[in-house]
Image 1 (cartoon, rainbow, N blue to C red):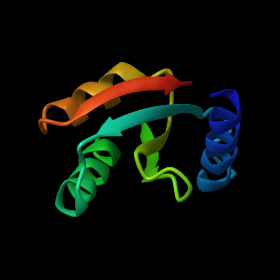
Image 2 (image 1 turned 45 degrees about the vertical axis):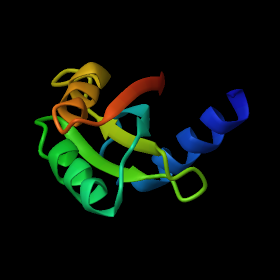
Image 3 (image 1 turned 90 degrees about the horizontal axis):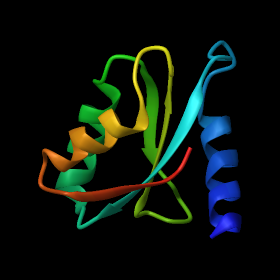
Length: 94
């Protein structure tokens, strides 16, 4: 599990622009997403105030990587936003 988290955190770091030095990263396990729901998950996650970016891992497509400003939002808000779509989630790393 630690290796997956390290790889995902590295991917998330690459996904964030350099001017977001204050960013934190959430690794969210997403169960039951399909092509239609994936685009909605990304749109809704990136629509949360304080979220810089969200994307699915290329190596583990059931893992959502999100960068966010901890002064504005937190991983629970990201997880709850996805759960409102009827998708099961769990925070697996920050």
